[in-house]
Amino acid sequence: MIPAHFSTEYARFRRSLMLGLLTVALFAVIVAAWNVYSSYRESESGARTQTKTLVHAIAAHVSDSIKLADFALIGFTNAIKLLPAKQSHSVASIRQLLENNAPF
Image (tube, rainbow, N blue to C red):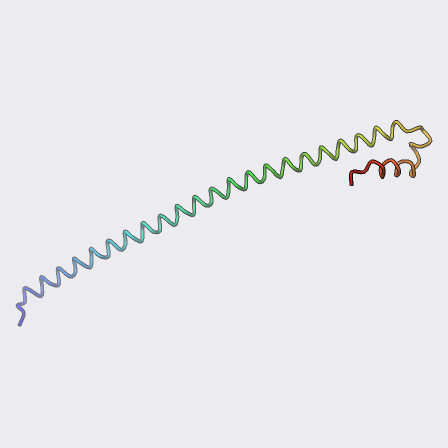
């Protein structure tokens, strides 16, 4: 038969061991959760930076496209102004001018 003080000490040892293991497990969970959260924040920051870069590139492209269209329209306006009066009011003459100089 095991003396009573051994079972009490064993129970105390077992309780301390379990508490220590639970503390280590809790710490491991906290570290893992922090790593997941940090990784998420880093990914989110990278995505924001990439999105800003893409927005600036698209804005520059749209701006350049608008400027190109504006220059083309100004060019056609000037070309129409240089036509003789009779041709500048003729739909067929203007259509011919546009078709001959269309970039597409």
